[in-house]
Image (cartoon, rainbow, N blue to C red; front, side, top):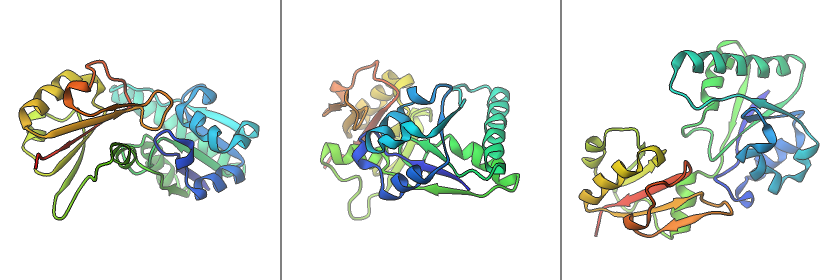
Length: 225
């Protein structure tokens, strides 16, 4: 069996009991990145499951590139590593930030694994958007409000036309542009950077969000009431 376990957004205490159990029972822990112990997901997990340091660790290279050829080759190679471990009868747990059903790189491996006849299972984790909303002390939706979860690579004009609450992920590379259209939207904007991590930053207004905010930046934009 090849599991993908969501380890939450950053706080080790947000790991689920099921994820902790499977990590403890696993033969091999797979982590995105060439150096497993430098992975954010590994460091989070180690805070809740120190036994992970005694596990067999393997890094699965998942480069951040838009080159479709490179991505396809890398994903195929990563899937082959996991398949080899499964063929040896080993139980593998692949660690991922947040929840494995939301913008998770494991999904690309999952498609290949299942096409090749291997069994996978996703273990849900606390999402960054719910953790960030809780940190801000706000609800994401009320009554009949819609909720839109979007990467900020979408066109700003398309996002601005949506009703309800906006959760914008992967905003760092286009933060100036995102802030510009949010400023014109009339929404109440807040953000959390590195939610649950030691260097967490809470931004209570659009003006508080730095233009150079890091990769783990999540924006919540609600319709003003």
